[in-house]
Image 1 (cartoon, rainbow, N blue to C red):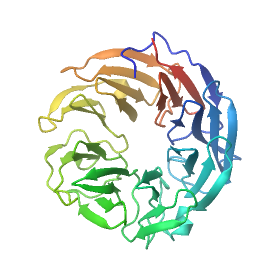
Image 2 (cartoon, one colour):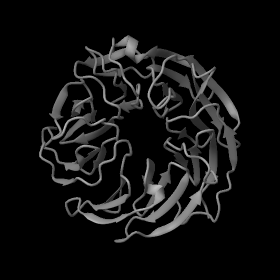
Image 3 (cartoon, rainbow, N blue to C red):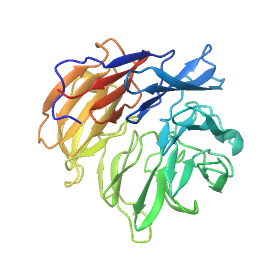
Image 4 (cartoon, rainbow, N blue to C red):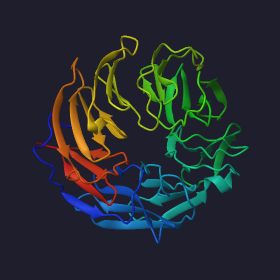
Length: 369
C-alpha cells in the first residue's frame, strides 16, 4: 500500500462484467479472478483475466439456479493456492481449477455432498480455506457442519457434526498452542482442531440474532470478533487451545453487520455508520471517530502497519494514517467516478496494483503516485 494516493484514478484497464456481484477479487502477478453471472441470472461464471491488460484468459461456468436475498452472485472470494484456484458459488457449487488454463480438476456441490437442507437466504458465503494441508468448507449439514477435503481430489478427509452454517468466512491460526480453525456457525463462535475437526470450544454471545458475517481477526495470541448485536470483542486463550469466554475488552459502538474491521499500528479501524478507531492497548477504547457519507454504508478496508485504505460502496478510496491519534486523511480517489453505488466486493492487491470490482466492471488501478 502506498504512502500516498495518485492525484487521480486512471485505470490501467477496465473489463465489463455482465451482472452485479458480491464475491471478492483474487489475484496474482499474472491473473485476476472475479465472479459473475450469465444467462438471465442462472449461471455462475468465474472469469480469469490477464493482469497485464484485463483480457479474459478463461472462464468457468456452472448452472446455478435459485433466488437469494441481495442477488444470486457468488459471495466467496476465489482461493488461489499453488497452481490451483478454488471457486465457490452461493448455491454451494465448488470447483477446483487449474489456474493457468481453467481446466477443472474436480467439482462438487457442498450442500448436496453433505446433505445440507436448511434454507439460507444469503446462500453459501464462506470463502474456501487451506488449513493443515486440507481444504476447509462449511456445508452446515446434519453430519457435516464443517468439513475438510483433499485439495487435489475433493474427497472428504474429515467432517464434524454441529449447528447450521453462518454467513462468515473462517480463519486458521495457532491459538492457545493448538492449530485451529476459527469462525461462526449460525449462533455461536467456535474453534475446531485443524487435524481432526474436533470442536475445541464454543462461545455463545450475550445477545442472540447476529448474522455472523464479519471474519474473525487473529491479533497476536488473541482473537478480535465483531457482530451487529454484540459489538467488538477481544478474546484471549488458555494454554490448551481453549478460549477464555470472558472478553479481555469490549466496544459496543463498533458493531457492523457485514464489514470486517482491520488492525494497524496498535489500532482497530472499522465502519458502522461512521469510521471508528479503537485502541488495542487500552481496552478497545475509542481513539476517535469520523462521520461522513463515505462511512455511512458498507465499506471494505485493508491495512499495513502504517496505513489504512477504506473502500466505500461508491468506489471511493480513502487513505488514512494508521498511527495518528486523530482522523488524518492522506488521500482520496473516486475509482468509478462516483457513479457506481454497488461496490461490495473486497479488492485484491499485488505489488502497487489494486483490482476493484464495481457493479458492472472490474478495474486495475496503479496506486503509485
